[in-house]
Length: 118
Image (cartoon, rainbow, N blue to C red; front, side):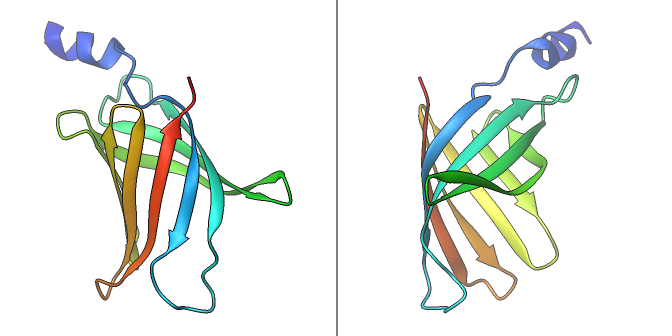
């Protein structure tokens, strides 16, 4: 029980501001390559969750695309957000995050690379 409290009290290695690109992996006309900023915050007393605010940069201005709770696997260093039609899966490797947005038909729709602000 004490170990669980210690883990819950520790800040995650993913909390912070991450910047990079979200690139189209298909020829879909609805998809556009984007510069993005992800703001990741720990969720108090829930080490398996983080809150992410995702912004895209348009004409130098941030536009929030959404904010929500993602699952964070501290052992696998991965982040995941699921909906009935899509799955974001991101892999954390030090100061880098790489991942994909996969649609329900298993089509990889986007590929993303982020670097953590220092």
